[in-house]
Image (cartoon, rainbow, N blue to C red; front, top):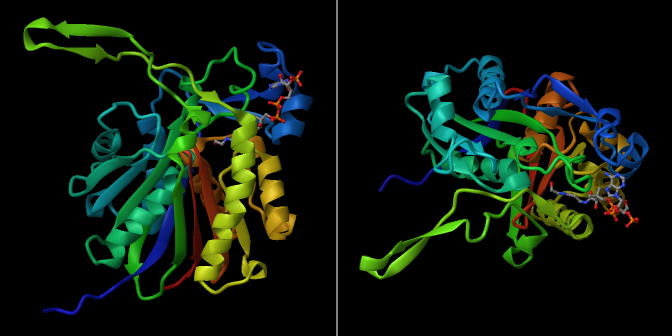
Length: 339
Ligand code: UT7
């Protein structure tokens, strides 16, 4: 029997995209009872990008993916797998295939990962399994969400938080391993704290002759969130999760070069970094420009950090996603510039 060989995983390149339409806090305060001061001090958000009717989540995902493909010098035809982390798909059966078509990635298998704000972290981990085992060589992971289409724009407790966007990364096998350790969790008993549920009893179809009736679901409610509970969950579980990863990799907190958390609220970023005793200058944050872009928030921030030269050879990046599910998880990366 051929000995089973494990491969290292390398982050080859990244990309990101946000829509052109920019909604500032001031603009929002013209339509709902809020203010720039309230939003800025409670969340750190100044503006967010919103998709218009002429663009779809696939267009955003395509732009982000193209950037990653160009930077990685990879042709779409050479992709083996596309993982599309989104909770706002175009099609309930999954949107990854639409992205595969748009990119012309004819050889790639493609499927969705539905895990809201943890989706991209889960995508990285899933991709790593395929690379480690030697199953696939070129994997594209996209985190994209358009929650602007799912929030109630008259509900000031939620609509001020979210924005639309997409981020992408290409992973390849390598001799050195960028993905050092990971840790994943789910607590389904708290799923009601943040959800988009279908309308109950939308209508039902009675199949009298067959002796059963089926519920016909054609509508979903707006996003609902218990902000306080989700906040408490994030600031207690995320530091724990990162500490577990550090332990697995036998690293100390002070060895982290960058802390990259899901961009949900600047106060969450501040509290988590304080709990971990990571100084502010090591915390990557772009929340003021985009708000909470769900599965896109981590890859957008990661791409910006690469593009601005913040991330250098051998830097250690602690990444954590958290949100609906409730799901949360971390991944520790030591990025190797050259294989
Ligand atoms: O990606 C998924 C992860 N999601 C999160 O991580 C979200 C976590 N939660 C949060 O970020 C925060 O809980 C929020 C930003 C959502 C809310 O901040 P908060 O400090 O928990 O505010 P609150 O809900 O306790 O509201 C305080 C007050 C309330 O008024 P009263 O009852 O004290 O009179 C709200 O009605 O602020 C009021 N309020 C607002 N006022 C102006 C709520 N939203 C607004 C608003 N503008 N947009």
